[in-house]
Length: 192
Image 1 (cartoon, rainbow, N blue to C red):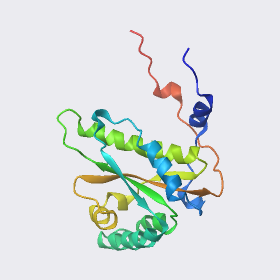
Image 2 (cartoon, rainbow, N blue to C red; image 1 turned 180 degrees about the vertical axis):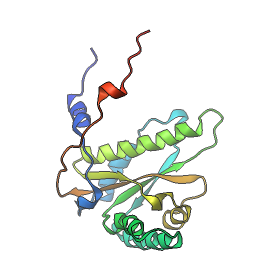
Image 3 (tube, helix red, strand yellow; image 1 turned 90 degrees about the vertical axis):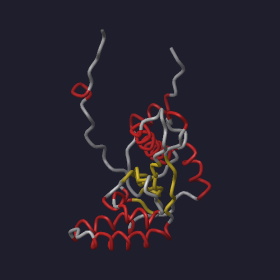
């Protein structure tokens, strides 16, 4: 039997995201965040393309992004409720890391595998933050899918898109666990 890492397994079996709106200061320092980013960058990456990068959104950027989300929502004709929701994640944000998918031309690695790698980075960063004792949540929201918001607010180029916004700060309360998938209904065993 291979050696076990029971602490890591227990963490994965009990991990729980913390709602971003319940996070408060302090957030990780730059030095602390570098450790979390380093862990996230160890994600599976077929072909070693690094089809992702990080944009760290510190507190000072949040007000600008909230205003931009509101302006873009109005320009797009969004309902007031949608505009408020798009704005709130930045109004309430302390620190977030935008994980940016960067599609790379490759004759061997399909685009979908690069997308999966960017998603793996999001989950790895979320789990690294939680394992380090921070509260963390993986969000997106309509602003992160709006090309103009992404170009102006985050400096994204045409071949880039937001895979996720990982909010990281101090948790104020631990949420109750939510219902989890029924493994019997989602698992097929193939023996021959």
